[in-house]
Image 1 (tube, rainbow, N blue to C red):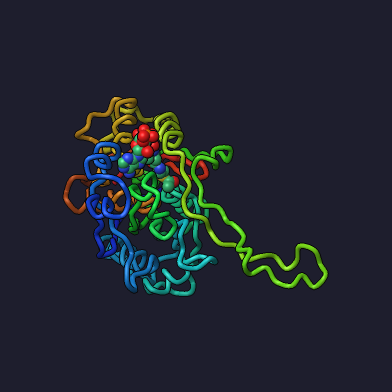
Image 2: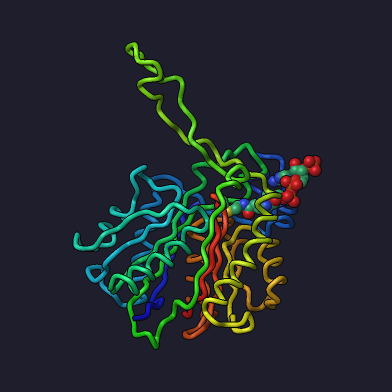
Length: 333
Ligand code: ACO
């Protein structure tokens, strides 16, 4: 039994926010942001747009490309750290796409590595449990958790959704060639959006000390950019090398390097360490910023639809971010 990618899709919010727009709300400039990150624009949810809505659109486009009906989907893995509902959004995404209640869906929280974790999970469902069609959706709306007065973080993030359909196939056609996923909770201090207690609603304890608990709310994203940068440049090349080893392939067999779109300098440093020329590197972060779990499928979708990535190409994809989490997948398109 094998599994392969048979379709992709993506969706972005309508509101575009440029570096110049940001320079009106924090002390920064287009030159600084572009030089340090490569980012020039980002899309941000506005009005009645929802993350769920983007996820549904992205998933429907992936199904259209794959020419698979929603009723033939067995599972939807919704990779997000920012669901519209604390209990997860996967079931609503499934209903919106038109899947039947015979299918099941769940959310995976692994920050910017979420899509890679979703891919490995989909592959396990197919190769291990006999599933036929699994939608993997990477979607995030970090704009809702950014402190828009903090120039160190607010310049980085944007909102989007991207999706792929992973389908069962014969072992000969297998397109999921190698994986490597890792985590290190000791690095959580470098990148987090933890819960904090809302003391204002502390109510009558009725004589039971500490009870009832106060309502939890999420803090804005806190980040030590330099440490995250160092972590990415150190761990991502090793992770790709491990995934290549599992696939039994040399780095020279990579047609496309597709990294989580966090910072152009990180992408360039990883490509240099792996000796991959710049014309084999996919990058679209100038237009969208860091869209967390959405960034890899969003960039893949653009590269496929523009004709850059062709059938049979080997892609080394790698995600990294909060947790800390990181992971790589060697896949054939
Ligand atoms: N505009 C202008 N100046 C700025 C800005 C800004 N937006 N932000 C910081 N500065 C200033 C700082 O105040 C500092 O000034 P000082 O020297 O007077 O103190 C100077 O620029 C340098 O700041 P650094 O933070 O040292 O800048 P650095 O070169 O490290 O770049 C950046 C910062 C872009 C955040 C970089 O560290 C980075 O990209 N790190 C990786 C972050 C990342 O990828 N995070 C996402 C991971 S994915 C996930 O899970 C969400």
